Length: 261
Length: 280
Image 1 (tube, each protein chain N blue to C red):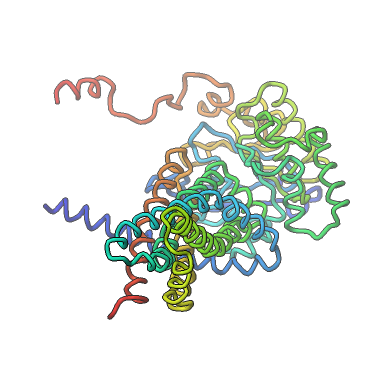
Image 2: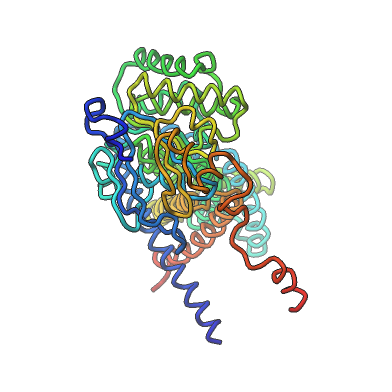
């Protein structure tokens, strides 16, 4: 019993120490961001790597998610003769929840894992150490551009995911299932609010998720053991931790933004 | 024998480039260094040798400020390295180059861009001048023709030479070599041996080589330190160590299989270890 308690205590202490290290890491990362004013080219390159190269998975996923929402929404609303509300259902589902959450999860799987593996391998092959020996701070030169690029890319990707999803919902419900196109758009226009829905969902939520996803990915890569197994474990941890953090924070943010308390 | 007796001060003003006093360093509670004293003479090639796992690379990391000692003092050019703030440490490192065992080239940059990297980061030289400097450095290591290759296309020896060109890009005063000869074919090794000596003399560098390749290192070193079990076992010129009466030095320098240095990692008696499983 005592051994179990000691084990639990040790585990909790380890987690707290790691959380402290992660916060110090974030502080140092934020402090390094000002370096990017001198070297905007580094940021633009990373925007391409983490943002533009993530577009295919975001576009395809958004389209299918929107199409599925259209199908499911129609199947449920048709019994009540409320198919004209389908546009609102699709749009609000995507803007408030599915867009920010699924984009963050897809980003963690596609770009976050790649960031962890890249930084972990740079550490394992002494590239970060050699950079420090050349008096170049890896926080400024390597980590900060990736972090800021990721934080900018996730909200933009969320907007694209949501737009393509609505288009997918339109194609299925209006073109395939025969829902009135005017009602589809008019209901959406009437019910979706710019600040309460788009601002909270697409902007604030995705900004928080983007920060979480990039912070976790870079921290795990930087702290990875410099072995192949260490990098592999860190990459797995990135996807698992980001997914759980995004879902947990989504509940908190939803409760604050849309909850009645 | 003291350094000043070997290298007269009038020939080498401010004779020591690196001074280590009372260095202790622990890893996971295990002592790697226990009150070690070292003096690295300026303008010379100094080798730090010892068996694998004795902390030679750790010593380079301590000298370059990548690690902090648990006790003692490490001074480079009279400055205590581990007391420096990050900005001052980076200033100091602009005067130091380090050749990593793996080469540590940036895999997403070509050979040319790897060598140009420190120049682009620390200077505002025009592109034409950077090109000239990079080509000069690559010519010095014999790889001017490989400028457009990527690191993945290089052999181990070539990667090490590119890393050497990058290490000297900013014309440092001191270069640290971490196992420069490990895993090299005979030709690459001979080229590297000659290159390290030539660069040291031509550029007036202070070179610190960490290695366990006795023949190659002794061929170019002016001064040697032998370390084992966290302590300096012997030091002196290659001639001094070659004639040393110490059985440990004799075993290491002449690669003898029998001697005071055990081949086996510390372990319980073999027989009782074998029987332990059966009795359990």
